[in-house]
Image: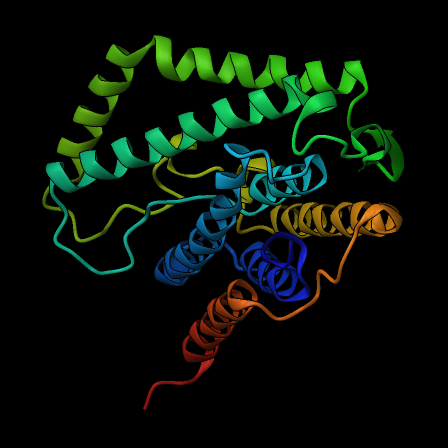
Length: 271
C-alpha cells in the first residue's frame, strides 16, 4: 500500500513534522506555524483515505498500525488555510468538524486494536506483525499492548462523547471570546481538541525555550525512528513494492514542497 508506507508519504511527513518541531511557538512565528500545521493536517487527512479499506477488509493490520503511528505524531486538523474574519460561527464549525474527526478516528483505532488478531483480509499474517516500541519488537496482536491502547482511547472517547454539554458550552464561550480579534483559529491556541497533534506529545512549558525546542525535536526523531524500524522489521512479510510513486505519494511531496516554501518565504528579508 504505497499510499500508507511509500517513501513519498514518509518523506513528506518527516519534513513537515521536523520543521514544526524546530519552530518556536512565539508571536512572530504564529502565522507560519499555523500554515505548517494546516499542511500537516492535510497529510493526516490523506492517511484517512486508506481507512476505507477497513469496510471490505482490504486494509492489513500492518498498514493500520502505521497509520495510527503516523497520525499520533503528525496530526489531523481542520484549521482553515485562509485568513477569514474571526466569528463565533466559524469557530464553532472548526471545533465541531475537528471533534467529529477525532471521535471517528478514536472509534476506528479502538476497533483496530480490539480486533487485531483478525483485522484485515483473511489469511493475513497478523500474529507476525511487529510494532516497535522503545526499540523493542512487540507483536501487534499481544494482549497487553492492545488493551493499553483500547483503554486509553476508551477514556478519551468517554470524555468526548459523554460530556457533550460541557464541550458545547466551552466551544460557545471560546467562540464568543475570539469575535473581533485579528486572528484565526490555530492549532496552538485551540487546545487539545484542535488536532491530534505531535505538539501535544511534547513539552508544553516554555515551547519557545531551548528545552522546549529540544523536547519537540527529540519526540519527532523518536517517532520517525520507531516508524522506520517498524517498516524495516516487517519488510519480509510485505508483498509487492511499496515505494512505487502513486498519486498519493506525489500529492504528499507537493505538500512538503509547500511547507518548505512557507519557511523560505518567512526567512527571506523584506524589501
